[in-house]
Image (tube, rainbow, N blue to C red):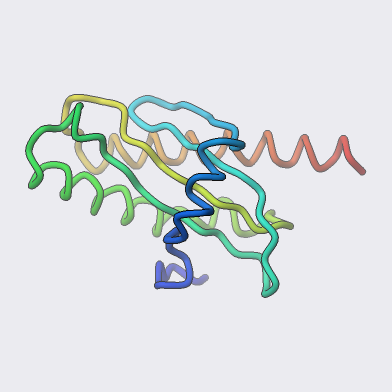
Length: 130
């Protein structure tokens, strides 16, 4: 199982990020919000993922960066929940929507919940199109 979260998996294209927020759909599982969009990718099925912690909610940069590190780590450890069933490339943006700093365990529970919701929506959508 590939748990890497390298450069090719990071969402870095400004055009793609803008398109994601304009056309993407979202799922919430407090304290996370997932905005996602199917993308065309020439190579194999791939996830382009970004994380965001609004300055408005978490004022201190040290705390924002810590939360972002935790979010990336939690996603990296649990992305296997998606990759086994994914048939198309996706762009993801995880947004932290709480004012409080949560523990790794609570963040992981929320991440698993949100990935499971996405998986159910995605599989249901694929079956209805087939």
